[in-house]
Length: 153
Image (tube, rainbow, N blue to C red; front, side):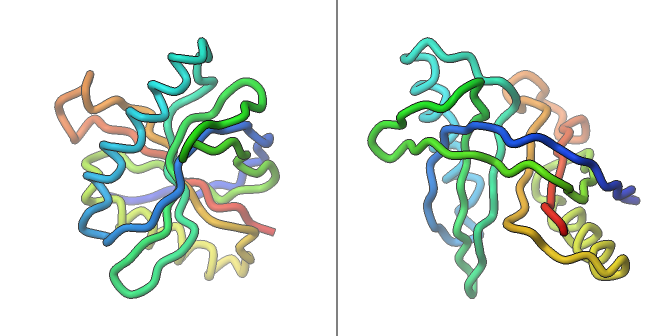
């Protein structure tokens, strides 16, 4: 798949999320646990998410990844237990869209990283993925749309 990268200015978003570390091979299973837990928190508090779920990548070490996964919300919330309130930053991002299964997302991340290097941009923080397609409603992985966002300066 060919990836087109563009620069966009986005606004800061309030979020509720869970941050954890796991082995890269466990990522799918961990997200399948975290995201429903955050959905339940929102539903139990009468909050409608203001956008699709996300996963932010805070770091990689060997075969482990430090992730934060959750949902954007319309206003700050208190959080509860391991669910924390926070924000996704506003400002300039380099972004690209991946169509297809999640196991092919590394190709999109590689393309975005290569573009940032070629255009001599500097990272302004951790990158994240936004999941526009709910696999529970769209069973064909070829139709899954994921947007990658990388803050730049």
